[in-house]
Amino acid sequence: MEFSVNHPILFALVGVIIAVVLGQSVYFLVKACRRAKQLGIASSTVKKTISSAAVFTVAPAIGILIGVIALSKALGLALPWMRLSVIGSITYENVAATNVLNAAEVSSGATITDPSLYVTVLWVMTLGIAAGLVLVPFVTKKLQSGMSKIGMKDKKWGEIFNNSMFLGMVSAFLGYVFCDVSDVFSGKTAGLIPVCVMAVSAVVMAICGLLSKKLNAHWLEDYALPASLIVGMASAIPFTAWLG
Image 1 (spheres, rainbow, N blue to C red):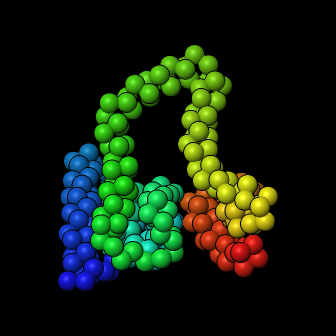
Image 2 (image 1 turned 135 degrees about the vertical axis):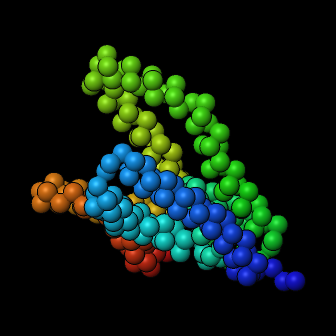
């Protein structure tokens, strides 16, 4: 049987996994509704909460859809659909998959035809993100208690510590953006494309933040990420044509 990244068997296997995840969601939704009824919470309040939560899941879903589309060229639809529907992140999944393809000297835009390479990409993407599942039960409580103690002693330093952790996480991906900038000195300008795309995304994010504060439209904060992703990816087309 010839291997294909979009083989029906892959969709069937992924469909089973997605069905289990959806089943868990429905189970806990029913349990939550029953518990709300026991606590005497009005049904109108419960319905309003459910509808509001459903509306605000549209924004993150757009970002996930973009991630699936971005990865589908090389990996097909089944694997990105599974990875970004269970436990995944567009920033991590894309970097993990690209690193494996680069190590195998396969262009990130080329469709995988080797089943062993496909399985390797799957394992790297899965094992890497699964580390969080193992660390959270053992590390999170200690980190949270330590951060709470710092915040109680000095609120200002507590905020600085929280922001530093976030910036540390972001900086891990900045290296991926700037890693090929030095190629400019050898006459290759393609390394500037990720930098330009990042700059455009940052500007869009800043504009959404300013509009949210100026217009008091806090709903924009939920759509800032997908908006910056879409505009940034769209800007990659003219930047690629210009910088090659």
